[in-house]
Length: 499
Image: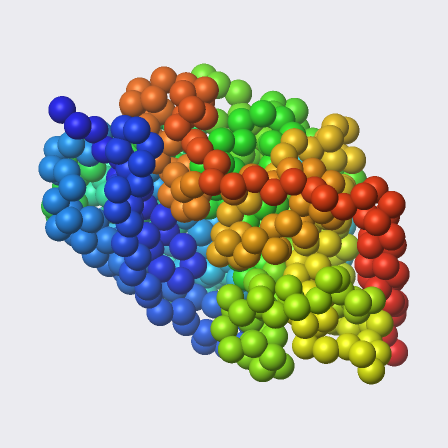
């Protein structure tokens, strides 16, 4: 009998549902978008019912393709936008409020009050995370203080809290299962990253009752079974779950300490496998759980850093400056010159992320002359994208104490061959682009397939994973030092205090 894995990739702007066969080939994929809600400046919300509806539409669309019978689906894997938080009623499954999205900044003042009270170092030590509204804990607190009918529901024990993975499992199992996997739990600021359990001190600081939270489970292994989902038979095991960036790391088969992947999207997310070693960053990178393969296995940890502006810089060239008509045009324009011509662009359009953490920094161009043209601006933009990543990867190597292995790349901008070559040159090492570019979906499928024994080990998954193209460095060490010196000089100017 043929065997298939169904993956649900629940993202910020839409939900993707995909089907993978036992050979690791993605047979089909569909995506349905849903509305973004911006009730106030800096606030971002989703309607949970619309998220669930988009997932159901995706499941129906995949089944209509008749690539397999519903009974041929041996497991379901879930990957999700991380940190987005909601509360729902255990009896009805209805949300008490809109979900607060990871991008939302409404809890900034509360986080600042914790900082002023001296709790920042405790939170970092226990959770591995910086104190920021980005993470789920302060979002749960806001919902508990501002949702209609919540006090009565809390008193009667009817409140469930969770990130999107928890919500989807609840819906898929007909309300029978309330769990989150350890990778998602590690993004809440409520889990002790050393023990893998909810922490009483952190729960107290953020005023979140333990009884409303899901149980923390492994990322691979049967954690629930379908019940009452239209089109699917009851009893299909939900057997894999991880946050999107961790799923991408797994989908890139980054199973060895020092393996790293970079996802080039609006920003760039770089995650490096540190193995069973819990590495504390000396440069403000995040220490997070990558995955846990079974209840009795030890967690695998990772370091994570992100640049706020990556592909968004190209969008700005298109929409803000109008020097290209579509994003893909940037490669051809940048190829018109041999190099950046002395022009440096530091794309701090929304501040600088890791490892600089300068939210008030603003973008700068330096080195402009009468000879500067559109092509130099385009090339400097591509250079800036890879130079930011080089800064992050350098401190990752310092934190881990070993040299990075070849970098695996994915995301929309990874299709830009010139960008990938520049990245290889600046890093001085090989880049590998996979055949399956939907790496979050692949990671969810691999975790679920391992969870039901479709594949026996990560080594077997590694045989499934295939590279599409490699990019090798062609820059001399001297030229690389000179290029980095020019970039660092521009960074220093950007980071100078502004009057």
